[in-house]
Amino acid sequence: MNKMLEHNHEPAPGLPQALPQDERVLWQGRAEFSSLARSTFHVRKLAIYFALLLGLRLTFKLGDGAGLASGLSGSAGLLVLAVVALGLLLLYAWLVARSTMYTITNRRVVIRSGVDVPVTMNLPFSRIEAADLRRHADGSGDLSIRLEAGSRASYVLLWPLVKPWRLFRVRPPRAHHRRPVYL
Image 1 (cartoon, rainbow, N blue to C red):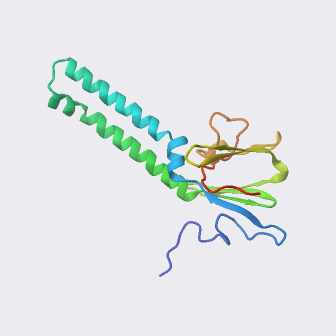
Image 2: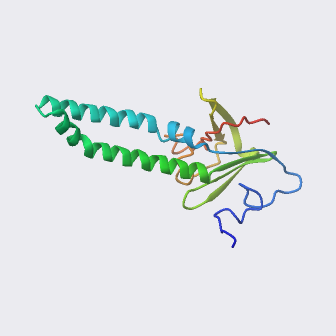
Image 3: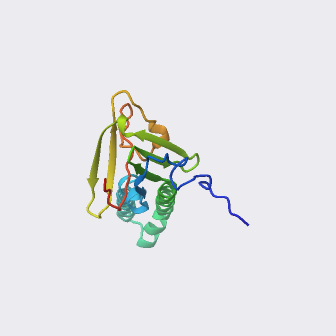
């Protein structure tokens, strides 16, 4: 029995159609789950935030004269909320990483993304003004593309792979890859 997957229709992974004969793939990569969770969804910062809230709640409970057992049980609801929130963020980061693929050819950048509604965006080199790579200490990096003034990309369709707070001059993608890009 053939299993139908969401990208079975692609002639090549990450590409909506076969490449023309004069075009070739230079690099392909996927978003990396751990880097995406850490730098886009800020899971570590949120975990520290929840830990501080839990610590403050426990401190206030103990300061009000509650025993340690009572203070811990009074903080259990917040702990459950924190675990559920962080779990949902981690799940979404994993889904985004699983569904995202970047392809750089000798003519364009192709971004396939979308957890629920897969979208493929073609960015011809003629529309790209600049590309920047910011490396992180763990070996991953964010690849940011600046489009020429007249070109647009959809912030909503590319979220969370875009640079934050760039609503009118969208900078796709935040690649979060570990494999080096050689052009």
